[in-house]
Amino acid sequence: MANHTLEGNRLEAIPRQPVSHRALIGAVEGTLADFLACQIAALDTVDPALGGFARTARDLVMAGGKRIRPTFAYWGWRGVVGAAEPVEGVLPALGALELMHTFALVHDDLMDRSATRRGRPTAHRLFAAQHGDRFGDSAAILVGDLCLVWADQLLARAALPATTLLEVRARYDHMRVEAVAGQYLDVLGETDPASWSVERALLVARHKTASYTVQWPLGFGLALASSVRADLDEAYRVYGLAVGEAFQLRDDLLGVYGDPAVTGKPAGDDLRTGKPTTLLMLARQLATGAQLDELAAAGTTRQAEIIAATGAPAQVEEMIRARVEEGVAAIAEAPVRSDARAALIELATAATHRPA
Image (tube, rainbow, N blue to C red; front, side):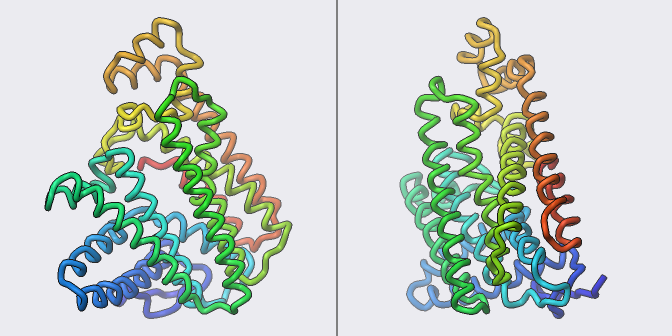
């Protein structure tokens, strides 16, 4: 194991393979911290209020999180490049994924009227505490927009050949379109959950979560390596969709049965909003007539009990298991470097059997 020491948020040495997860996250967060400090300073010169606005955005970006998207992108890249390849040139691209993720979280929390994220008040709640709900909603939209612009700016700083950056950008854009499409379907489902289905819930999971959490970050990492190979691209696609769907299915379970002290979010939010998740759609399929009637009228605590009684959580667990198995099989046969294969197999389990 190479020696990595932290100076502030930055690594003194460029991570080389094998690299610890902690060192990778430290390098990504150091890149983000340096970039955001410059952006805040620039806005401070325009008006102090803008500096405060930007600091709130920074705090949302830096407030913990699993950094799972940069991690998958890193291993997608490492699956091709040599063990001694320095990561410094691609760190801005990895950091850009976290800025995009913050954009998605801020807007998603606003649409869901969520009170907390990562154990802290959501963006719209933070701003509402200053000047009321309408201001809070408007400012949260702008924070999300700002993070998306920052993601573009940081991605452009990656030290890559122009042709490579074009391919990376194409994949990044495709990822963003799929995430927005999935979010729209998610919102649409809440308007008429009775007409939704398990199949459509899985379609939402595929676009809203799987594509931008695992599938496209892996393909994004492959493009960063300046070597887009069709066989590896397909293996990453199969792995990414399978593990990404399993990731969302775990989220469905945690949204109902997770411990708020661990997840950082209130339990039952999905039930409160009537979000037609795969878990809820399965429960409706399996429920008796009496259970369906009670499910429609009960509070969130009782709804969770009824869903458990239908056996839907056990079916979702089996769906997670099958998808992880599919993803591991795809990467086990992929033409990828052995260290990346081992890391991706480990990540398939870690990302889908988590408490938060």
